[in-house]
Length: 453
Ligand code: ATP
Ligand code: MG
Image (cartoon, rainbow, N blue to C red; front, side, top):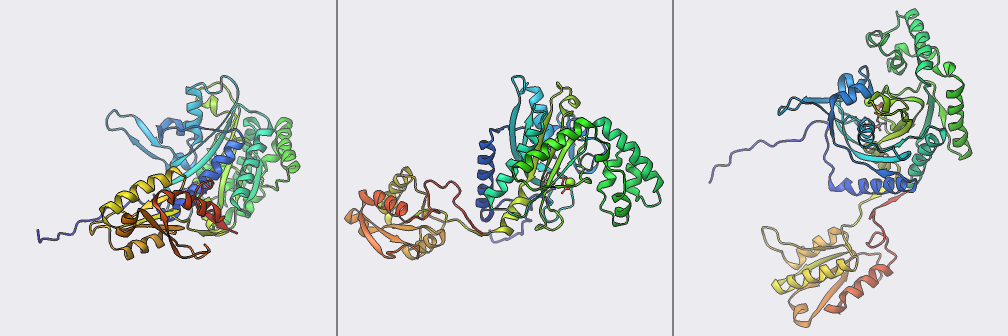
């Protein structure tokens, strides 16, 4: 057909990103590190569906919250009319699952999850419509020790990732009755300053006055700064809990700032709330946020169960890792197999499997529409792969039952090519690669990536 009609390309949904190979190694490094830190504190993974019944979030997070009011992807299942929502956060689903499967019947549980979350926000740096969180939820624990442990876990993660500029802000928002007292004081204070309130604040004055403290409107800052502080309304038990958290953090040399203005965007929080913030990411500087939520189980009709957790934004942390370190692309493989003729290709396939059996990462040159290409073009691909060695099996090698091995990296001493009997090639390469002290190659390092600080 000579007709070359232009077919319109379909592009992805705005604010929802593809993770491409250039970044995936960094994501894997982050994920492996956070998984091993979580495991080192005894946290177990749970996976809940991406879709939940809409009332779960409306009831759990609160009707008058940014998320429920304007950020949720909610829809009706056209098959049966069910009202569903793409999860905007992870805690509600984990608590739903814990109640449904009676997870805390035999004692408290430390759980973690990771995956995509969905919020209809204005896309910008560090703010997307599909983004990813990893979160921890400690269910059934009531003391300040677990709050502090969660915070220390985060600190360990920043240390392991080499992130230095992440600071802890801490607050206590007390219990419901303490918040009610404060709320009454706040409403009358705001009423006395109604001339300064903007439209959103006026709308929230009686429904959610606490959120007015979170305003970004510069004209309201001074008035909001002088508003009654919740900390002054905390009773003895809440204060003791808050002191307990601080004492453990100090004892473990975790620096923090008490931010009396820190309130969280979800209604389910009580007592301890915290955020980890950095000034290296522009205005989207909060990389992790969490707190205690002792009443969420009851809100969902479960047995009252105290709990505490956090969620971190993976995109923002990946961005911070890029800012903090000079990130090297890891090599694709240890060995790249170059070949010619059908027999050479067959032998390469066999050798590739044997090398993988020995723990090496191997890329076999495969044909495209134009065939396997010349030696020269295959060697270019080998070079671009970042491999330590290219193994060549051409007509001569097949005839002599050997392989040619060429070291590809300038930091490997003998940068020449040698012949090795086919059956000795695996041992030779394993020795060479293990002996170079090259930790980007294979075997023990699951991460295959370096960040130099
Ligand atoms: P923000 O104030 O930035 O809107 P939030 O209070 O709505 O954050 P949480 O619901 O506490 O955020 O989520 C925990 C973390 O998830 C945030 O600290 C952030 O790192 C990340 N996060 C939240 N929303 C987004 C988003 N739309 N895109 C990317 N990351 C996000
Ligand atoms: Mg938000």
